[in-house]
Length: 89
Length: 301
Image (cartoon, rainbow over all chains, first blue to last red; front, side):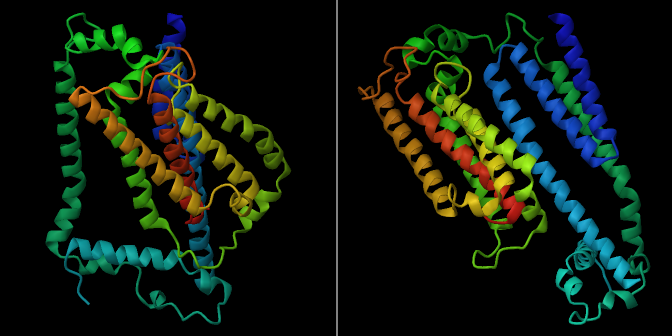
């Protein structure tokens, strides 16, 4: 069980760093959600099932959806800006 | 037009940026839109207008930010080094409070799940504050993002496309009821096992968001409108406040309350914890759905 926890903690660090350094925003977001899922498993292993449920619902569910919507809106804004530039040039 | 202050330049830069992005009407009717004035202005007028002090500020800014960040990190690390070792027996956290909560929590609150006993009975005041903070947050987002409610429905081709997507619709119609059922189960059995109002409410909110994603805002109006959102959130918060007011008043004056711990591990036990879990769950689920709805469409319902 301890090896499993160490493996999860290592993956947590990997996920945390790669969320920051990934250039593609969508990939970064998916890694961030993976971080939340790993954290949720760790909470369950640390005998905090209440936190595990909340982490899975809020960290991997709701904040993921909100961030995805933000990404979508960013892309819309960027596309509009590009169209505008094309029209002006 | 001479730009002097840094803030003024920032505002102008912001205005320029949003000018560029928000020309939707001009996109659709190129003949009607006024000729943009931006074209005549050279691309980088700010550089020439900036005074020497501002240039120095711009150069110093990253350096100062780095120094400030490093100082903060060092202070935080020093604080962490000063903390007592993890899990030591003589930690200040290991005092009579923990023993009391774990030892006689079930007998005093009636909740088998000690966490529910702590957050909704011993420390219910904190949870009341949390619920109000959530409500204040959604109110702030409402003020910032709500579009005029009598404005015509925004014609979003992406949303219409999504409504027809068979994979999403079928998956959502299978999964969403289970998700919502699990959330309600979580809410109702928070005093017996892991779960509780907040996590259950978040799960129900996620289920509502999934439904809204798959079937579009028009059909979601049958379940959640702005009216139901308002009534449910406010009445849940009021119920929480009034019942805890009664409970605190009786507790502080040593009076007998009508809420008794009951028989632990029964579903109808633990006094106020079950109704409070439901109240918190209602507030949280509607707030989560409202946040999504405001982000996505600028309105609730």
